[in-house]
Image: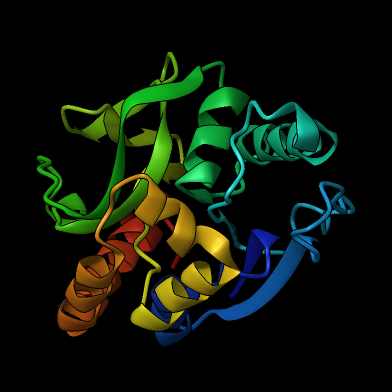
Length: 230
């Protein structure tokens, strides 16, 4: 089996999700939309649907409603819609989840409260229960016809649409990837917003082994119960 990671930029790595998929038996391919984060342009020559058993759309420092990147966000939303319509399973992570919501007729808007760090999430679906890592300032609505599976006081945290799953949190995160985000310029912006970036890094290091096991359960459940792959 093959899985495709569509990454808006190179800092959005497959991480623990990719590791769990490889452990399940998948081979991974990646497609990076913005190789250069200093430029707003991006490539949208996505691999044809049908060449992969599932697609993962990762996070992004951009919002789906940012006009500067509409030249690649709009084609990505259309690609996600086509995948769902042709029954290709999608796992949308953070920005990817928001793009899924828009693709299915939902709404994404600025949240009343940003979330950054490890957050407890409750759900009737065991594999969705956290803590999970959050890093977002937008919130999506659960589209009509989709099933909301988790939410907190900020907004929806997960929904299912057919064989596809959207999660607001970042199951892929590792300490190394968080440091990469910090180095890309996020640490200064977060500190300016009042977040304790060192504490969040310390928590990520402390929780990484536990998170790895939780991600494996999440991916096993997604592959078998949502995507319904062998």
